[in-house]
Image (tube, rainbow, N blue to C red):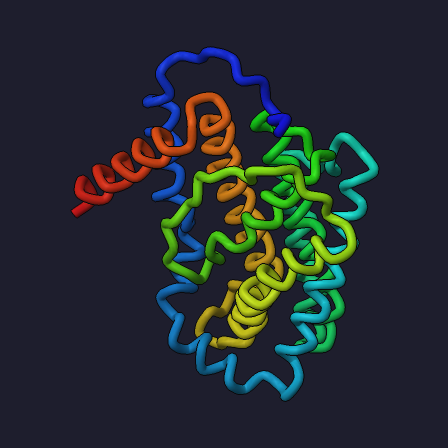
Length: 253
């Protein structure tokens, strides 16, 4: 296998792993903590979504991710909206989607999904990865499996793909089959959250910006760990990261 990064000697990665662990612990921002607080109400609203909406969300998610991945094949760089531009664009699409209820929210979903995936790809590039490589694009998609903003998930898999993978045809469909149901469920929770009256000012704009920021942060953590994995080996990085997470959690209690 040809790694996307050169396996050059580097200093002890302990400090960088500690920083990544701290970022992981803070991955849920204030907005996400507020949403989690009202998780029960959101789950209740999920039950009131119209029949067929969940299946519709899955179909929209699969189509949008397929198109976004194919766009990423044709250029070295994913669209660069800047650190503030991407959340602003996500907020704009969320505001438009939230203006007309569930109908317009579903209509804007493909744009939101595309913007989120491109933000993940930009994070991968910033960590030194070539997003034209199929295994890197596959890892970008796997970021969407790492737990949504409404989930309490500290798990980061530091293993890297063992062989190059062509993300076309059956291979892409197989990968999406694993990703789409979970990610579509997260998007369904987002739509449901927009209908919870108690959330008040947490509009579609705010939710979209928060979701994008969350997944972009997960991407930086994941690809930061993957970079260290290429340079130092998966097992040492995994052990060091898990130990650091455990230490940080004990320190919070």
